[in-house]
Length: 292
Length: 292
View (tube, rainbow over the protein chains, first blue to last red):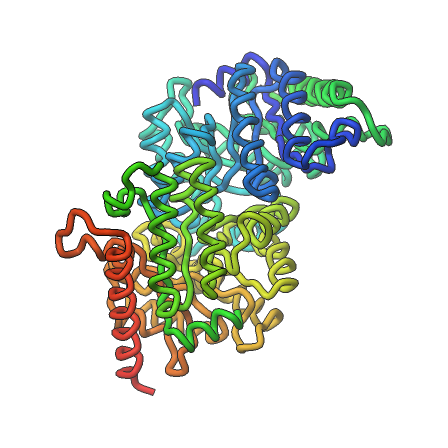
């Protein structure tokens, strides 16, 4: 988690979500390109325009799998561009499978065509489904964020179930991850594996931050999903540590916000940059307003 | 679920898991081919040799993602070969994400390069993460299997947690899926979405089958994972319905079972065919022994 901790401390806590649908690309930039090529063109412009004002990029693989093999070529080139820009990637793959299979996934997403710095994982199959990822992550200074309490409505269905032993399911996931973080600690003091916790629902978010002090969080829910700077700031410490706050549509679709129907690709990327800077500064101010 | 129900009734309940590592391919068949090409060559031989003796194939995408873009080309061609052989595919992708993103995943795995007949899904994010898949599945006569109680040790960590409201987490997942199956029923009487339930742990398996009568199951755990024909038979009804039983290594590595170090590819595929027929017949006999 060290590389991400340092990047967030230096460049701020914004994680830009490259959940780029071909529809989000300005029409003139997409002209005469395939959907997958147009997404790549826009991604490269976005990365060039924002790498110095965000901690990292979260690349949601679903948007690329939707475009088939060509989409995954764009996915691969996007991860490479993030690396070449000196930034960090979180592959939002939410994989979760048993030992043998998990080892294959880890091989696929920590090396080769789809090599990312971090991944997201689903805990449903149990702690043994995380082990091969940990082994691979330790070897290469990588890390993972495990789903704990997500920002969607459906998190009530299972994650928020109260357990007979006390607490909710997401608390148990958090506790197991927190125990793992004691065993597998990065130099920055946080665990090699962090957690995904939405900043929707203020009280729960505050409780999560208080309870799992050694977890670095990937925080969805900001922007298009409804949460504001003060909500996100609940997770961020005054030293800049604590987590990274993801925003996707509010940044990558910023060029459309004033009703624009088209824009050249560098102009659209500049709007994304402005949105990322605004978000970074708003959260920084909100963290400053927090009581010590 | 109709196509799979009919296929299982006609060809037996075996689901062959194409979790094919390059190491499982006979060396002489792999000579002068890339790892991804050798896996494709072996898969095509396996499918040709077994399509009439199994209900379907489960293709574990992790083994293909591990090989990068070339691996996913092999994945795509494998799905196509299954279709051309008149059989059915279960894409073992265990995806699970929120609405917008889930819709992209459904597009990616029910159409285009990665079009499969069925997928596996993870329920951790909640029922809203399944909705876009259901919409897509209904449109095209496809279906999904949602993780309920898996066959690995780690299933104890979260799936088997007792809830304050009574029952275990996997029971709640089963109940929600069973309710969904009432609403979204296939012609065969089972839900459009079934569940993944391991046949390890006999008593629990029997309880699951008794309780969730309208769920068609994808059943891992047979063979290399330790469960036997009588365990698998717990899930299968005398009319041939109830579920499909997956086996991977015990079939696709059957050519190595007598200590063989190499074999030509059609010989290896024939060993897989024999193993599949043996498994099919053993489970059929075990179902016949069950009390009515």
